[in-house]
Amino acid sequence: MARMLKGGEDPVFIARRMLIAASEDIGNSNPNALLLAGECFRSVQAIGMPECRIILGQCAVYLATSAKSNSTYLAINKALELAEKTSNLPVPLHLRNAPTKLMKQQGYGVDYLYPHNYPENFVLQEYLPPELKGTKLYESARNKREVEGERLQQRRWQQEQQQQ
Image 1 (cartoon, rainbow, N blue to C red):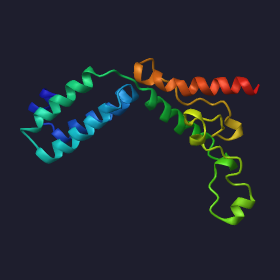
Image 2: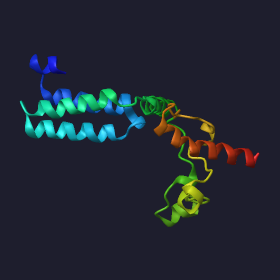
Image 3: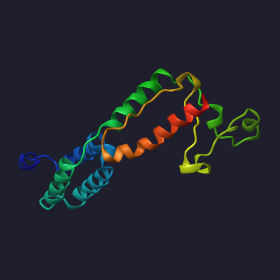
Image 4: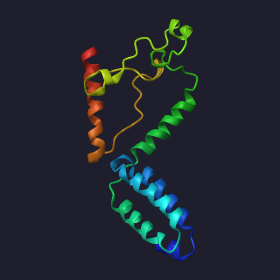
């Protein structure tokens, strides 16, 4: 980063790349990295050189020493690819909003299970079209932060087993 600055690189470009790295390379292993990089970006825009070098340095060290995970990066790419291939599949009726009487008569929103009405705000419910049942788009990385999120995946598996 120091060489880039000395070479005349725009500090805003450097901050922008850090913002991308915070999401793409660190992701949910440390969600605060994105917040810090976002503030770094805004601060660099507001302050400029030479003082913004301090903010860039702080952000660079934070990002470099943070746990890394690209699981959400991989998941969104997988989801976009799936969306492109299956864009013809309709949203399940129970997930559709029913703002009109006609939509209600057509079954929009019927049998929707509101997760907040269930223990731990979780309920087994399909969110994808039937043709995509069982599709898994997100695989958590093996780090402390993402492993916490596996609780919902385990709960889903347990409920599926009970229904069989």
